[in-house]
Figure 1 (cartoon, one colour):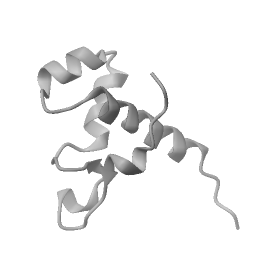
Figure 2 (cartoon, rainbow, N blue to C red; figure 1 turned 90 degrees about the vertical axis):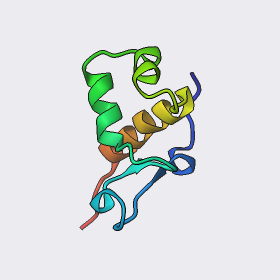
Figure 3 (cartoon, rainbow, N blue to C red; figure 1 turned 180 degrees about the horizontal axis):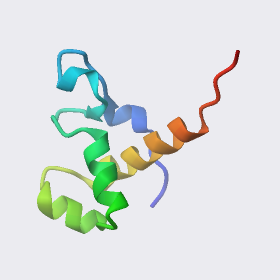
Length: 75
């Protein structure tokens, strides 16, 4: 699957889930999706548990995590 622009799919709002990054239009935190992926769940298994999610949203969670891992603070 091609990388997606995670900014189209992920939002953070202090009024929703205390500002935790979540999939736009849902109350599903990115960390939940990443936890499923870490547990070796497939995209299809995740969508089975959360039928409103799409493969693009799940990919966005991975791209978001990748960007966070690559972030380097400049001092």
